[in-house]
Image (tube, rainbow, N blue to C red):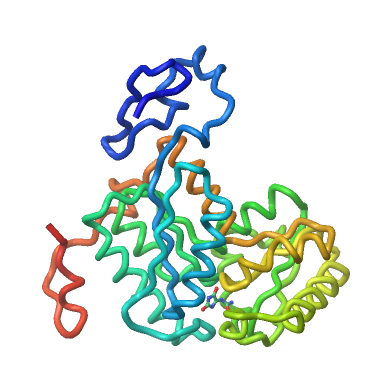
Length: 288
Ligand code: 2AL
């Protein structure tokens, strides 16, 4: 790959992982000539849907591709086992194991970034242990994005029983001050696979009430399956509406462009080799 703004000088390899992110390839003076980073950088992004709904994986992959830079290749995958939707702590455990499975299987592939596309961010820390690529959860990315555009935001999610999962993530990520409310709609996750006007209207009504009740300036959509509704809800509501899938893709691209990788010296060091038993035993082995 050539760096376009130098008229064809070879781009540098960064961290031995990817080429031609030209913010780094160019000297500062030349960098000033570069007007569009997105047209030059190439990267491969793995989107893991922790549930096993193929329709949802496809919908979120399409949503990710719609916002991705021209040089970003998005590959969508889902676990080989587990529930079709994640709406309980029990589902969440298997979603996390499925994410770990997909990260393990992807270890021989050169992904530059990973997005975990379920609002509970299942398996996020485990995924970070399994790769040097930056790994973003959609809840974490959405909370950060919302806090850039509003002093307070509300989350509108699916089943009320999943609110506690989002509440714990808000605490874990330190967004207690800016997250002003988490609202369940009791829409099942699978109803979002092919959702009609009734469902969109129900989410819109919940969002309007949340904005009023919480005195919030932005809405975070609390399910990966809502990714395809984001634009239309933002138009209807007239406030920033944040879909974590899109936010995570753009933040992943930024981290890659900055040359940042997941650290391996401390808390995110690779798991120690050991003996595994049972059906998951193959996942205990480091692929060669
Ligand atoms: C989710 C989600 O994003 N995907 C899924 O299966 N469950 N989250 C949620 N709050 O319902």
